[in-house]
Image 1: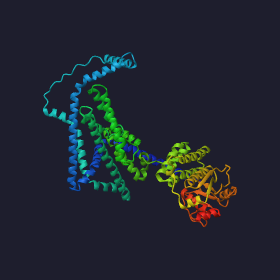
Image 2: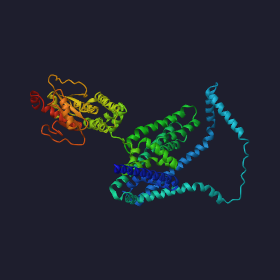
Image 3: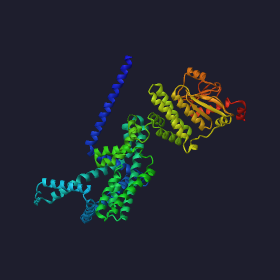
Image 4: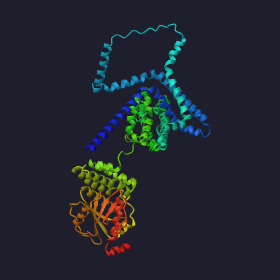
Length: 604
């Protein structure tokens, strides 16, 4: 006992030490990202552009040697970026020079708003309060300072040029560093990938290579498709604004496309400035709202129709993870962090998928379900969310077929519930919720409008059992969870075309047989019963003891042949396996024990 307690204490101390170490490493990494951003941001941007230009280099390399291919692609990208920059700066200069001409239109808009607020309404009172506060603040501020007189000194023209160039030096140097890094990354990407494999995964070259390849493919595809869709969005926005008579439509289209790289909020930010300019430029109130509605409509079309068709399951990241990632990287690296949030999140997801110790990243960031379908159904039934559990069960059946879907959904759910019940993890109310919820889910599946899609193809044994007039009475073998298992097996038998009813252990069941049919008792379990339980349940049966069989839902063992029933597992009177196997074995048993005329008819 002392040894066990000591081992438990050591295990707890090791887990605490591991958590402290992970927290320390994470905090250190965040601090390094923040304080090292002057070095890390150009490197991250260079890697980003290397991913974008990588497919182009691969294509051009078929025609030219690698150095020439890299030079052509990088030079083309620099020229394209330079032309776009010149175009944007020219458009911005035109907007700045024409702002004074919009003053009269803005004053008219303000007069219109004041006209709406006349009459002593709430808007008028609010404007009066704001004006009063502004007047008080102006009085407190004191007299305006005298205008500064600039004295022209005899400084050299070189100092003037240096003062003008100095603010531009840092961004130009950053751009130059990024271009140089992109060139060397593209020239040496094969060697770089080998170095990463040697550094981080030399013990498992295959897994590390798969991780790098997965990350490269995902990031390159996402960035390329984002570039394509956002450029198309820019063209559509520019064309629409041109049709509406908006000045400088090229600028607003490019701005909307560039801001759309920011997840979720970029398109909204790209619509604000054109709308404000439209209020200043366009007469009346209709055209500005048309500008706003046009940008929003185009974003919805691109985001809800075009991108799902192009992207498919490319990213694998949940929307919530993208939002949180954008907030995190934006706080660390500013606007550049917003642009890099999506590719960096994808890289973290790939690490979580391929590195066992970082598996929590896949759970936190990935869009794959964190729980298996049967676990989802189990949790929802415990919470009495029957509608949600029914939706999960129906989705499993529609995706995997009636047999596999019922097993992976309801069958494994009841096995999990029985395992927790055996460990005393479930309260009485939770057990009742599972049993009642199972009946409700099965009723929902039975009432599905497209119920024919849920029916499996009847095999030869099921057809023979139906012709023999067999009917099964499924009843739970031990407790309430077994009652749920009986309801599931009866549901599966009915959908195989065999008459079956389920009843609970305390319910009175009729042992009578209708004309042309005979009843076979089927005692159902969600786990293997003991021999004593099996014998006790057989003694309790009122009729059909010779025909009765035990049915055990079991996914751990494959059915083994028995002398009496081909495919039966365990003792002669036990049918074990998944639900589809139980239905098949039950149909074979029904044919074997059918009365003479029915059996002869079935054999014929």
